[in-house]
Amino acid sequence: MKLKDAPIQRKLINVILLTCAVVLLIMCSFYMVFEFFTFRNIVKTNVMSLAAVVASNSTAALAFDSQKDAEEMLNALKAEKHIVAASLYDLQGNLFAQYPRNLDKHHFPARPAKEGYWFEGAYLVGFEPIVQEKNKLGILYIRSDLKTMYEQLRRYGVVALSLICASLVIAYFLSRLLQKTISSPILALQKTAKIVSENGDYSLRAVKSGEDEIGALTDAFNNMLARIESQNLQITSFNQHLEQKIKKRTIELEDANTTLKQQKEFVETIINSSVDLVAVFDKDLNYVMLNKRAGEYYHANKDDIIGKNILEVFPQVSDSGMLADLRKALSGEIVHVSTYKSPILDRYFENFYIPLTDDDNNVYGALNIGHDITKMIESNEKLQLVNAELKKSNRDLEQFAYVASHDLQEPLRKIQTFTQLMGENLNNEPQLKIYHQKINQSASRMQQLIQDVLNFSRISNSGDAFVPVDLNQVIEHLKADYELLLQEKNAIIIHSYLPVIQGIPLQLSQLFSNLISNSLKYSAKNPVITISVLSLSKEKMNEYARPNDSLSYLLIKFNDNCIGFDAQYSEKIFTIFQRLHNKQTYSGTGIALLFVGKL
Image (cartoon, rainbow, N blue to C red; front, side):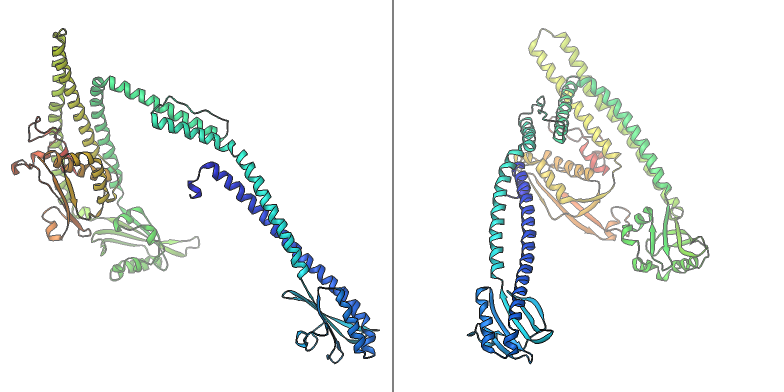
């Protein structure tokens, strides 16, 4: 099991043990290193003292050229078992005597080295001069092993390991005892949360253990349960006063539609007022700044452009007059171009090129302001299009008001009628049940109408930003939503790989949901729904709408084997509350395809 998935008790114990182990290991390591260097210095000091004594006692043997005396002097080193080799050299550097006698001569240096002591691998090697009354008679070579030091370090290692193991055992038992002060309140809170989740009893409260962070968490958890409990009571109360709230919500819906419309007009006014593209260049024609409006025009992230040369980002401007105008501004001249056609966007701009100077009046960059005047050139055509849209919007609004008032009043009229009949038949219990059932049906009908109107209003007035939407994920989510209905009708949904497009996730999900719902509703048996995608050429796109040459288009086809409708009703089905089939045969409010028309 990974540490992140382990229980909190085990995590606390592991953290404490790991901390203790690391601290002890570091401490013992430093101690071992300290002992290692200390013992080396002790060995070196002892060997130097021993070599000085041997060298002092060997002066007579070298002075009288007595090899026998020299060997006897060296044989005295047997008392020091760590001395593995020693030898005497005369003034000419020739080997005079050695210890041990039977050791091969290649174990001794052929010639004495410089005076001093140093470590070679597992040995200490030294050369001690033999001096008599300031006269150098020769030199002593001595080599000592370090077995005593390594044996001592091994003993220290065993002791350190034993100390670490004993400390970890003690730390383990202490951590098991002390971690309960942290883990017990958390586990108690988790147990309470599990009971609430399984039983749905929001009146239960967790026991607070202290005023620390866990206590604060417990308070927050209890406050959350209290809020959920309060909300449940409010929902229950809401259900008990459903009829009154329907009337209230109708008024609120009208007010909300008015507010949304005003907010939409206000936001559109602000957005439409921002018409300038602004960029700042340094003297090398590298981008220093680019505003949001320009990034939207070029469909580029400004962070990917800042710092790059204009010809690197937009090589199309190399043959335009923009480079020449920028260079004029960098030379200190203010340039105004009343009409400039961008080779990148195929749009018209009024450009200003303004030099940027420092306090010493030295030009360090240029400011480019571009005002889009394409709308002025195309104003007549767009004005006609706007007028047509406004007329259509007014017609839709009038139709919505008329049909909505008719369809919303119908269930209210039935409720009033059956309520009156119930008052006239208070003693007829079977008839009262029938009237009660009719009232419930009318209330449910009106509730569905209100919900569909709310959904339609939200979709129609949505101001959400376009984001990348994976249509494959949308279909998979809807398959999960309609899983039981698909199994009940033995229906299948077949689709090829669908693209990722720019759109509003809620609207696209609503669009596909309504299409699938209609296919399942109006299919007699074994519905087969097929979704495919085709790439459209510019010529083919002209048959559907006015294409933007800078964009690519796809045609998403939705086929099914439902009952269909006559072509003469192709416009009527996209009108709110309009239905082509009998309500007793196929249930619904007539709003589903209206979403398709709006999207």
